[in-house]
Structures are given as C-alpha cells and as structure tokens.
Length: 283
Ligand code: C2E
Ligand code: MG
Ligand code: MG
Ligand code: MG
Image (cartoon, rainbow, N blue to C red):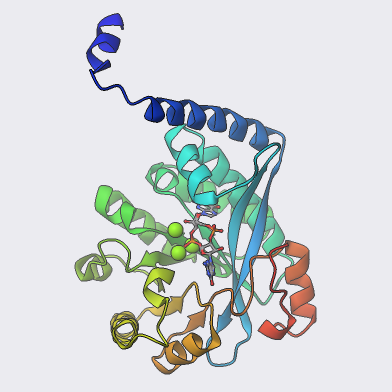
C-alpha cells in the first residue's frame, strides 16, 4: 500500500484534483444519506405528440436538494453515484417511485433514464419486471432511455437487455443521439423503438440553415430505420415548427413545459393535457 502511494505521488501533484476527489467522496456519502432518508425526489417533464400537441409521455428526472448546497445538477450526482457504487440503489429508487407515480396517469407513458451501470447488472430486467408487477404499471406504458455508452462498452450484453426489455413489452429509446458516436451500424443492430435527438443538435434549428439540414437528416435517418423520433431541449416554438415539418414524432422542451411535480402532471391532465396548461417554471 505504501509502495502504491509512493508511486502515485508524482512531482507535480495536482492539489485541485485532490480537493475535487475529496469533494466527490463527501458528496457520495451525502447522497447515500439522502437516499436512505428518502430526501431525493422526482420531477416529470411533459413530452407532446408533435402534430396534436397532446401530452403523450413524461420523462422522470431525478432531483437532489442538498441540505447546505441546494440543488445539485443531476449530471454531477449521477456520475458520483456511478463511480461510488450507489447507482444500482439510486436507479432502483427511481424505477419504483416513478412507476408508482405513473400509475395515476392512465393515458400517459413514462420514460425513465437508466445508467449503463444498471444496464450491466445481470438482474436488471428481472428486477424491472418485479417493479412493474409491484406498481401495477403496464409494461406497455414504460419506456427505458439508454445512452450510446451501453452499446459501445458492452454491446452483446446491451443488445440482450434491449431484446429482453422489449420482450417484456417495455419500449427502449436511445437518448442524447447526436452527441456521441451516432453510429448507423449500432442503430441497425439494436432494436430500439425511439431515437431522442439531443438538445445540442436541436439548438438554433430555426436560425441556422446547417443545423436545420442536420436535424432534418437525423429525423429522416430515424424514420428510415422505422423509429419514432423525439426532439429534446426545444426552447422556441419556431424550432418546434421546423422539427414538426421534418416529421419528428414527439417534442420536449422548455418552450412547452418544464419538469414538474407528479401533482402538477395530474393538474395538467385535468387542464386538457396541452402545453397551454403547463407552468413555465420547474416546481
Ligand atoms: P436527459 O435524459 O437527456 O434529460 C433531459 C435533460 O434536458 C434534463 O436535464 C432536462 O431538464 C433538460 N431539458 C429539457 N428541455 C430543455 C430545454 O428546453 N432547454 C434546456 N436547456 N434543457 C432542457 P436534467 O434534469 O438536468 O438531467 C440531466 C441528465 O441527468 C439527464 O439528461 C440524464 O442523463 C441524467 N438523469 C436525470 N435523472 C436521471 C435518473 O433518474 N437516472 C439516470 N440514470 N440519469 C438521470
Ligand atoms: Mg433522457
Ligand atoms: Mg437526452
Ligand atoms: Mg443525458
């Protein structure tokens, strides 16, 4: 152990990295405590059917409000959960709570983000089947969102899981498309139901001709592979119109609705399930 330490103590020791490591370690401990104290919560962002603008789906997004630091960005605490061995427990919590909430919204489908760490776990599909059974949510109302990391780091395993999820009746979406490998080969090999175009690709679609052509081509690619296509991160109605014309199936973004509480989703349904009924602030 001492030898190990000696070897890693290089001449130019970067103390900022050290501090960051300690910080992440502390946050990991606090995240574990938050999980045990049931101090995490979920918000749900509406996703609208592009042509009719009816509420079709909600995406569950995890939130952690730290006692002294306030809200911690999900990208940060999810990566901390992944590196500290907490992701399975956090992911399980998300699946259980989201399915339980979604049972109350009979006409709305639920999308849940699943980390590669959960995907790699050999018991994942069986555990998910159990959670569906416990919650009473029909498998057909659930969609799992995964990222390309899965396909690249353990393609065989990921392919099997996607197949077994679809056998359960759960649909599978490829999230953040356009940011990573965006490989056509992988898209053909995996039987996804849906492609979610990342907001970095969508941003500026109504003002920049190249962005527009790229989005149109990406939507066409999805449709050619018989996939549904969701565009995420839409902040302006002008952008939505172009995506709609290009054949995009679903639209998600702050232009229509922010992530909101389960109770607010219920109110939105009661108010007619259109963007007009949605609050523009996350609550
Ligand atoms: P994601 O799955 O791509 O989720 C969409 C993100 O885009 C959410 O960020 C959402 O709030 C944001 N967004 C939606 N519309 C707009 C828009 O019009 N403009 C802008 N600027 N942003 C928009 P959020 O909630 O911060 O989550 C970030 C990421 O954290 C998610 O990206 C997902 O990868 C991860 N994440 C969140 N919850 C979970 C979870 O329960 N499990 C796992 N494994 N990952 C999660
Ligand atoms: Mg997502
Ligand atoms: Mg995404
Ligand atoms: Mg993401």
